[in-house]
Amino acid sequence: MSNEWWDEFFRRFRRFPFSFFEKYWEDFFREFEEEFKRIEEMVPKELVREMRTEKGVERIIGPFVYGYSITIGPDGRPIIREFGNIKPRLGRRPLELKGEREPLVDIIPEENVIRVVAELPGVDKNDIQLNVADKVLTIKVDTPERKYYKEVELPEEVEPEGAKATYKNGVLEVVLNKKKAKPKGVSIKIE
Image (cartoon, rainbow, N blue to C red; front, side):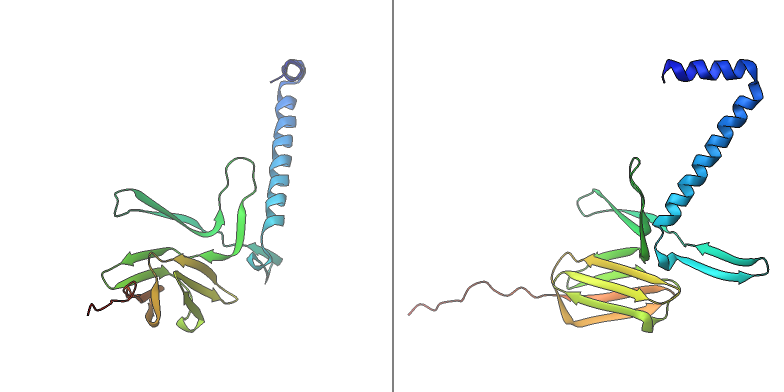
């Protein structure tokens, strides 16, 4: 810090020791309030609701969800998967806020199938939209109460026609048949 700042600090402290702290507390709370207003402006409109209460109209902002899952991959290295609707940033960069949450998803490759398990609490099975193309499974829920969205990268190509899905107690399970490998080239018979 500069010497000017320290000079000002000691000059104010000697004259009015408690008023010095009052001024810096006021500055601290003012900056804190400005930071909250800045964050509030970044919030997607879908995450802001107004409710009438006995005290008047109350603004409800959120929910904000962030979490991560750590598993050990087949190569022994950790696999970290984030979920939620908020992505933290390093330094002074702003947070990334989304209107929809990213559900926690596990991908379980088996011999002939790929099993995808996703946590989607608080929705009806009729509200879940699933789409599979090439090596990507898209999970989407768009209701007034809950919004989820996730594009799941699959480890192999799958047969979309034979896919099966179940939903029970907030857990979605999708079973996708792996695409059978076609022989490369054509066999030629020798005469």
